[in-house]
Image (tube, rainbow, N blue to C red; front, side, top):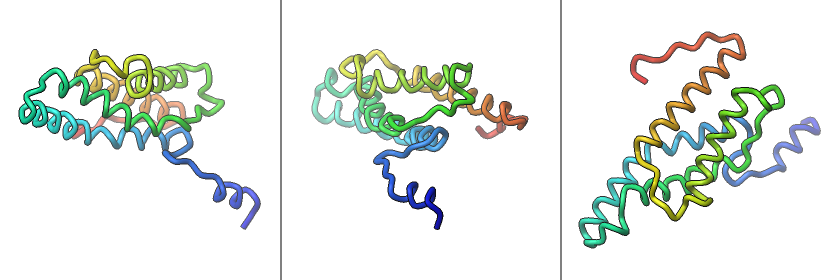
Amino acid sequence: MDEESTNEESQESEFGKGFLYPLMLFAEHKGGLKHQIEMYVQLCESTGKPDLFTEGSAILLWFNGASDHLYDLEIPIQFKDTEIGNRIEAIVEYAFERGHGSLMGTETTTLKDVIAMFDELHEIMMLIDKSMGITPIKGVYE
């Protein structure tokens, strides 16, 4: 085993480290958002506390868990100060503001906003492919 392999194995990251890998882990949480909202609807009905269990608070709790994967995201040097890098940084900031920052206690984010954020992430992934000489094609069943 070479020294680089040994160093990589001794490093740890609680939520993933890299560029595309943390973005993938973050995106994998998308499927749980619907469940989170449904759970809050049920809690709202069973507790009779509509101000406590709202769609907005469910979304912010979802961002709190999903955005943890973005802590060790590293933008590669070839994407720093480029459209791709800037757009990734904007998504990371957007997620952190809602999951850990100034917007965490508010409920201004809607499901429509989250869908728009994921649409933006899809566009960025296609730009990354293009930057590597690959012609991406949107899937019919996306």
